[in-house]
Amino acid sequence: MPGAGHPRAALAALVAVALLLGLWGTWRAFAPSPANAGEQLRQQARRIEALEQRNATLARSDQITRQANADLQATLAERDEEIAGLRADVAFYERFVGATGQRRGLSVHELKLAPQRDPQLWHFVATLTQNLNRGAVSSGRLQLALEVTDGGSMRRLDWNVLRQQAGAPGIEYSFRYFQQVEGDIVLPRGIRPVRVVVRLLPASGAAVEQSFTWSAATTSAGG
Image 1 (cartoon, rainbow, N blue to C red):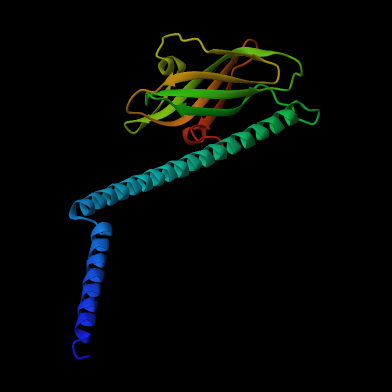
Image 2: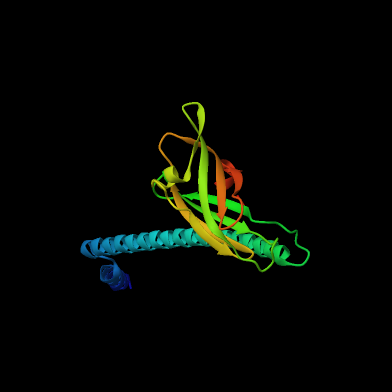
């Protein structure tokens, strides 16, 4: 029949319209509204900021760990150097007091000076030895003197000057084989030390003097 196609066309049109309306409704339901889109952008921004802060924290933590590891390695190297020096000292003292050790009277085995916070103040450690008279006690006092250049001329600063005290007594020592004697000296301003003289004044017998260059005495062990 000629008019039969018209209802079918109308039905098809209605179905198409319904399908379009359904798709539009679904999109409206799931698509972000302008307000929701703004909130999502803010959430993403906060998330990015949090991640950046976390990355910065991790980077800082890694830097601290690396620095701590470097400090640890430096400390271990210093300890190894110190242990090596102590072993060398022990070996020397074992040979010194042993039956095969060379016999020597009172002498200065080593002298070391180290600067303190005050640039004029220096701390010294002198290692005294003797094995000539086995079992005998060596006692007396130790003094230092400095040979310095001052304005182009060489002169000697005695113990009283270095201790800033008139009639300053020497530092006492008393030992059988070896002993470390420590003390402090004060250097006048404007001088250039050249040599350090250790003067030992035993309770009996003649005084003993030994000199060390300033550079050798102020070089750290193993340096």
